[in-house]
Image (cartoon, rainbow, N blue to C red):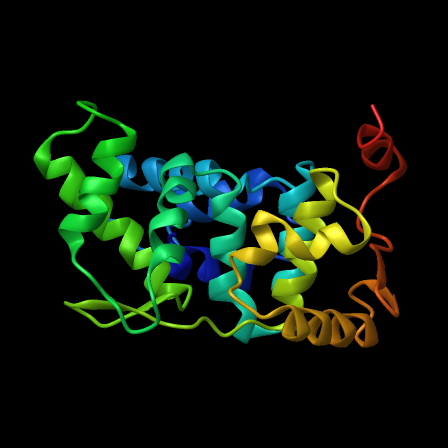
Length: 235
């Protein structure tokens, strides 16, 4: 998920930086130390594909703001963001979540999962590279551990990650209790009680407004969306 590149770029630019600011850092200033002009251009394109890199894009703007809150949330937060844009990474989620904690994931199993979803699309070499990259992303995010042999692990989920997951569900039309049972909250792997506690902590920090009374939960997202973006939800 190009986490180190993303980290370096964000360290050198403010939250409201423009796409050209990031691109100039990569292609002109070469802050990522890429060896050729072509590699710098490809790096920029890959980052745009994964993250958008433009605050005019609603999710990127919110992602960029949340990034600054807590450095420890960043690997999982980057994975959450990339999942909204990368179809191969999103497809691999089912394979990762199907594993029991501690279960071994051979690279060949991820290759097969990709091949099953995209038959005859990738060569054997491409499948190997894709599987390695996908498994590397899940490792960085905390869902796998191990250098050569990957085993399922439990990610370190923080209030920021829960706030972002709830927002993603909200943008897909979920409200109230349903926000705690979307694909985005399920992928965090937390028990319902833990999700509620993390949502409460996010509320204390001002990340969301959360009310929990008996069996009813209400979540709102102050200052995340502008009026135009809010109106899109009801079209």
